Image (cartoon, rainbow, N blue to C red; front, side, top):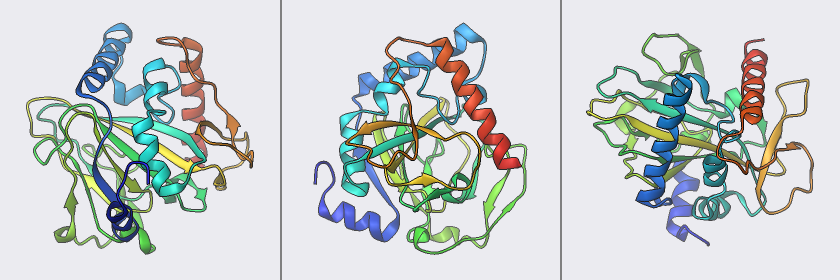
Length: 268
């Protein structure tokens, strides 16, 4: 094991999640917040509205974070040494905002097989029960689940994906300090409540899969991913470059193109 204990790995296999794991320093987390706030000042756009699906592509900082050795060490303990980062998104809840995330699981929307994908969720600001941290249903990754699509103005998931028959009394809340992260299996049913705190709750959702996994549900252009550790012996994903400048406008345009195409294929 590189980062997790044997008990943590066993708990992940049983429950579908592990937390908290120490990752970024407090200074690195603060630098991430500053980078996002600078982006909003410079562009006049909100992070949640524009930085989705492959939000690491335009930024050197976030290209580095998806490759952070402490994060990858923990991911390697769970899915092996050959790792792709195929996506990343920011989840921002404004202070005292009613926005929430309904109960859902990710794999059914992403269409990646085998179902061995994980999300590392990195806290850039405090994420706790007051500010609306993630909560998970233990063991839900081991069973098939059904869901409905019921859009709601306050649901951060725009399609309103909602898993049926969730027993919320079993939910485990996963509080994190800035720089810490959790990992959940992308079949794990999870959600988060509104932010009742006086500050923005900012988290970074990074999607990893082993290189043997492929995206099977969508047709057309071969999907792309960044090889962040190990070797890709399969070639299911087109390689993505690592951003070396603070902000790359061309990479931002590519991010938007991929995001819009991905959303369009899902709706189609």
